[in-house]
Image 1 (cartoon, rainbow, N blue to C red):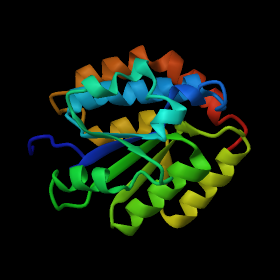
Image 2 (image 1 turned 135 degrees about the horizontal axis):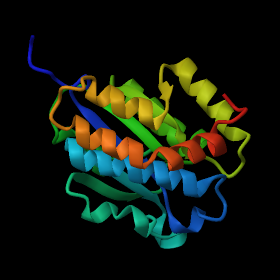
Image 3 (image 1 turned 135 degrees about the vertical axis):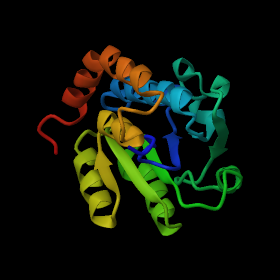
Image 4 (image 1 turned 30 degrees about the horizontal axis):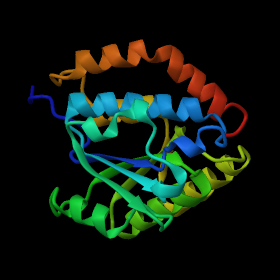
Length: 204
């Protein structure tokens, strides 16, 4: 039997504009943060590069402190922007430093129909495999979310859930990190269910 290997060779996490000023405005914002925290924990375990942005930080505030993005050991870039897409020069430069291979990029954050959508389209144009987590994105108006996800699917984005994506990252229960990851999934099961109910119920 060959040695177990991960299913995804070059996973990468993009965190889009999860800022303090948006906390009261975004539908199910606490659940989006919970999903993002779970991804960041998994990124520590699996050594996945993390990219994050803020939108006009001086006006709209910093990234939510509970994410602790700046202290993450695998943070590649945390950039401010005015452009809606995360695919700005600072992010592009840090992304290029990872290597020339095409990557599997997962996006969480806000807003689903604006910054998340435009980031996904730019990454698709660059030839990367793009995933958007339905339990990790939202908008001010909840009704925008299913419309955005339907469009993204039509454009070639894989719309999935956080738990599905984490298991696809691993691909094999024989990898060294599996037990630690399975423990994380079990510990987060209740919050994962809450996120799915808040963000997906009756909308997919």
